[in-house]
Length: 212
Length: 133
Picture 1 (cartoon, chains in turn blue, cyan):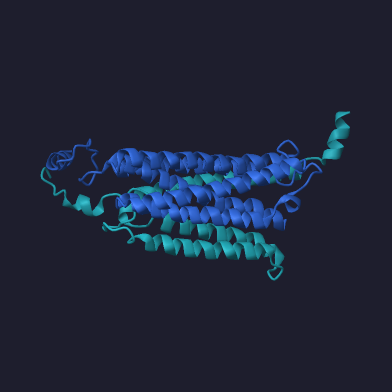
Picture 2 (cartoon, chains in turn green, cyan; picture 1 turned 180 degrees about the vertical axis):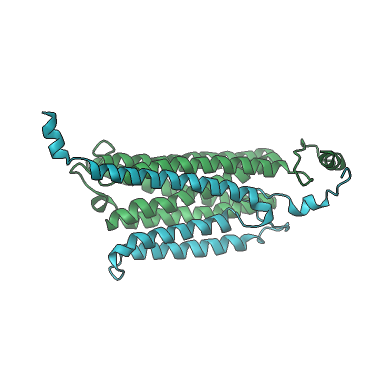
């Protein structure tokens, strides 16, 4: 107790002190990052429920098309490439923000946006194609599960793109302030997590679906 | 006790997830981890797509191989992109991740297990429909 007090008094930090058992302080950046990490894990748990419902429903095609008839693995490979490269450029943008390097930050963020938007366009094209074939979400249990799972990921990517533009605007308007950099940390975590979910998605839905 | 040294705090302080231990002030340094991650992830992705399409691999082993490759790639993303490590500054992040993984595994195995048993115990749908008439 008194150890925290001594540590808190000793530091000229204007941010509220959060005591740790071993003494010393946790910076606000760590607290914010940890809280957002907890949120992302709960998001992953939500995706797990969608994965579970998809896996349960995958054979219930109600006489309609199965994944083997519908999935085009060339498209999926292209989507995977876009999202993986965007995750990489997002990492570069994180470094750019942390080192106050405008060229790196804006360049990498723009690349991330272009790649994310390309991913989304390919996915929407795929969805439109499936609906045009009569394989919409109401066709069978399998397709309901498919559109819920993959659509939810696409929705996350859409939100991520809006967030990305917001971050560029905020850095442009307010500069590399600590609070802006904390938001940037959260955005980076969010974007990398979307790519992790996509890894599970292309494996379980597309690759296993096409091999089935 | 009252004047416990706070200097250990700085050495063992927690890291935020996503923060690499850089200690550098120049862009260009710290890129290495992302480059390694990109290389490994690309390699694992290519192998995944190859395994799914090829006829060279014994067919029943394909789903297992795909799951192993996907888990490996998620590990690569966690370590090289999200910088979740096993270091002492990352204990909280790893514990939260472990709890998340536990819940995910419970949801997936529980759902698949119980639904497989239900399917097994269900009357075939045609007979069920006849009984309703």
